[in-house]
Image (cartoon, rainbow, N blue to C red; front, top):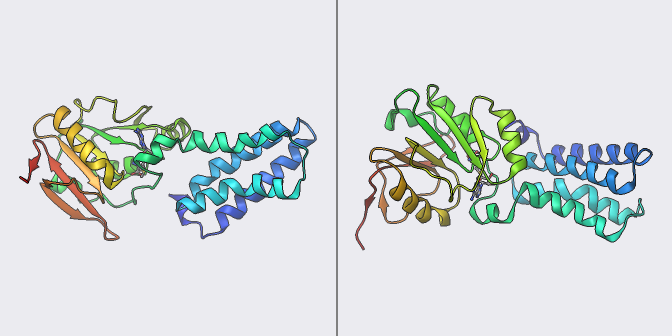
Length: 247
Ligand SMILES: C[S@@+](CC[C@H](N)C(=O)[O-])C[C@H]1O[C@@H](n2cnc3c(N)ncnc32)[C@H](O)[C@@H]1O
C-alpha cells in the first residue's frame, strides 16, 4: 500500500496539516461544527496510512486533540463526538474483535496457485477485504478468477471498490455471508477467529474448495499445504473436507 511506504511520521504530519488547513479555510464559510466534521473526515480517512494501531490512532486523533488543547474554536461539547463517530465508522467495534486493518503484503500469495490451482472463472472470496490488498495479491495469483470481497466497514468497502474496480466488493458480515459458492475463501484475520472460520468452511464449502489463511493456522486441523510468503509469514492452506486431528 502506498500508505505504508511513506516513512513515519510523514503520514501523520501530512494528515494533521491537511486537516488544519481545511478547518481554517472552511471556518470562514461554514459553521465550526461543519468545518470540524470535514477536517476530521480527512484525518480519519488518512488514518488508514498508519501501519499499526497506535499510528492510525495518532493520525486520526492528532487534529481534534490539538484543536481541543489550543481551544482554537468555540464548539459545543457534543461536537467532540464527531471524531469519535467517524473512527467507529471506519473501524467498527465488531471488526476490531475479528481483525484490525492490516493489509496482505503485495507478493504474499505469489506461490499460492501452484499448491491450490483453480479453474478459470473460479469464485474467490476475501472475507474481510479491508482496502483490497488481499484481493490484489489474489489477483496476482489467479488472474482468471472472479474475485469478490466482503467488508464490514462501509467506508473501507467503498474505498476498496474504488481501488479494486475489477473485483465485486460488498459491505457485509463475513460470518453471516454464504460461503458455499466459493472455490476459495481467503482470510487474514486473527488467531481467535480461525476455529470459527474452519467450522463455517466445513459446513458451507464444497469438497475440494479451499480455506486459505495468512499467518494464522486453524487449531486442531492438519493443513493440506503451507507456504512461506516473502517476509517470512506463513500461508496456511486447507482443502475441504478438513483433516481434523483427534484429541
Ligand atoms: C487484517 S484486515 C485484512 C484486510 C484484507 N483481507 C487484506 O488481507 O489486505 C481484516 C479486515 O477484516 C474486516 N472485518 C473484520 N471483521 C469482519 C466481519 N465480521 N465481516 C466483514 N469484515 C470484517 C476488518 O474491517 C478489516 O478490514
